[in-house]
Image 1 (cartoon, rainbow, N blue to C red):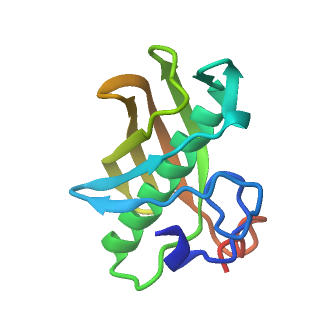
Image 2: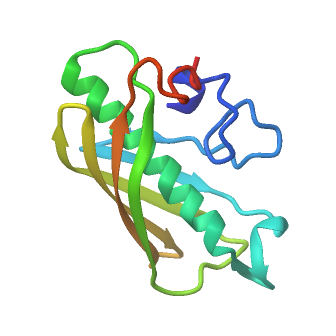
Length: 150
């Protein structure tokens, strides 16, 4: 989704144009998106375990894209709206290991106009490591983020 719809984005989590960013790539699934992320040594909080901020960024950006794609589909638009995070929470269920692919799935829980409630799950080796939910909102022209994907 990111490379197709926002190739010039510099977002740390999902921006394809951010050389030092995470550069996540999300793909459609039924009622949501999925992604796989390979961690690097600099993503560790302590040896062998991933930093909670990195986990939060993965879930936040992935949830944001899930909302954008859902709002786009609901409106029948060709391009997703620019969406921002209004609220998100994360529950870290167990330490997230470094050196194994992280799998994130998201689901649209509700969609109302320019707002989408999204749930996210991060797993490693089949174990749930983190869960999250958030409210993501499409912004209008004049908002500081309006042109960030263009």
